[in-house]
Length: 426
Image 1 (spheres, helix red, strand yellow):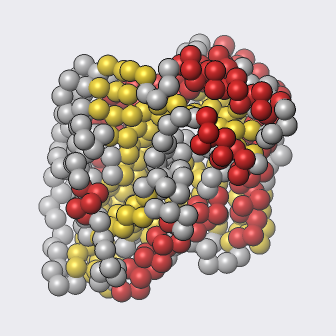
Image 2: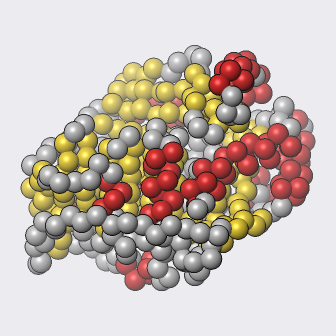
């Protein structure tokens, strides 16, 4: 499942959306782990707690960039849905015609929607296979096979765009600007380069991420893989939900000590301030699309194997026809990945961060023909190098507010790099 150089250009869809024939039907004999079915040549994945989707092949694809990339993608998807002939014997969110997608953090970063030729899905004990093909060549349901990923050996890590010392200096600069009143919060990211002795089979870290972080959303879209804990937005049959994470502390492995750390995180004025900015930005963006909303006043502490986060689950009842992708567009970029005020924070990121995020911290997820779907924020992730299959860029970021300490923020990013570093280990 190594990244294929030039695959983006080769598979890009141009002109009007094609007419597709889609069939979803129940299937037996599927592995307990959906990722086991991903073939050697690569594929797409979205799994959590054993449920989700994996797919391979390309029935249709859109590559898009620019300030109107979400609108272009939504129009293309609507055209594709309108022209498709669908026979769906399952009838749940995620069956029938489905696209996977990921979007760049900035307007200039690449974004894409991909419709695979085959999808294997599972939801609440029901497993199905979906075949998608041009109307001129109807596809028969495939015989599902199991595929073993190749382990990744001898991985070394090197600084990306900035050394840790340089990045800490940038954080100190941001704190000075926040203290001066230029803005309230900015999220700064850094990257790390992973280099393996042999080409990286992306299915290997995917399996390890899904096993180690079952409560996260493990994803793979066009060489971007990860296990993110942050649900940007889910739309399902009129209910809209979002999980906001901001405020982090590293776990020690000592349960008693970690409980004390969780309590200190829940009382931390610095982390509570950062969290409040993030929750407010999500609630404000979703409010126009909801007839009613529930925004808890107090966050809870989300325990993950490597870190703990302050978390708030925001929920609302949809009052219009906005799709999951439309809602993701309304939310991006939230204060959790950019800052407050958003325009000022975005400009500061471009000025001092010193790297191209690409699709890191952008929306990643899936959507079906009804507009239901899930979009998370692409965190705890890595991007395969399309020009060197032995290399990946790993990413992490931290929210900077007036009370931030540069050394503590650097330690936080190191903790957030642990999932991908461990997943690539032998």
